Amino acid sequence: MQRLSSTAYQALIEGAEVIEQDHFGDKVLKLKDKTFLKLFRVKSTISSAWFKPYSVRFARNASELVTRGIQTVDIISCYRLGRYKKTAVHYRPLPGRTLRQVFPALDEDGTRVLAEQLARYIAQLHKQGVYFRSLHMGNILKLPDGALGLIDIADMRFSRSPLKEALRLRNLHHLARYEQDVQYLIKDQTFCSTYARLADLDVDKVEAVMQHT
Image (cartoon, rainbow, N blue to C red; front, side, top):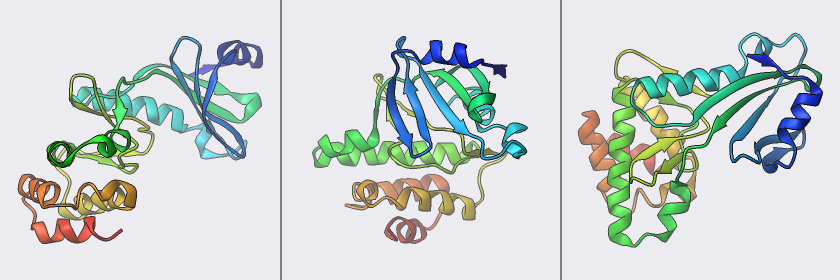
């Protein structure tokens, strides 16, 4: 992790576009060179986040995903911004559109095809031991080549073996929390039946989770 002075930080973000912010300030910036800077606020000068920064977790998660053959953002560097009580991760974005953008434009057949692809994708993540706490359609991209990839990856957990049933269902619950997303996955049996078959789970359990919005 590099320490970035106030002057260097201001030079880095000159002309940047604010993509996301909250009442504490900027959270995600699109820089002039089309790369992104994601900022993580450290609440206290003695916070554990200084020792295990979310920016570093983000970068390590990206590396682990790539190792497991899962497409995600390309990390450039991590920074410590002491004066601002923030750390940051600088990365090249993953090209594509979020599933939250893609699904509404699809007809019934297209929705069914993408729902099956998503079920296969999530089943594969779980088989590879990937537990993505921020699992929702705003964080899954449809890439130009038709494959899927992950963004906003700071909050993840990895295991060497496939996820147990309880963790699989808990992770699906994260996906099902967003009614605007899950409506495309419960129109028919495609998503639930595909995931249940690949995960060797009772389809009724999967349906119960997905329909509990």
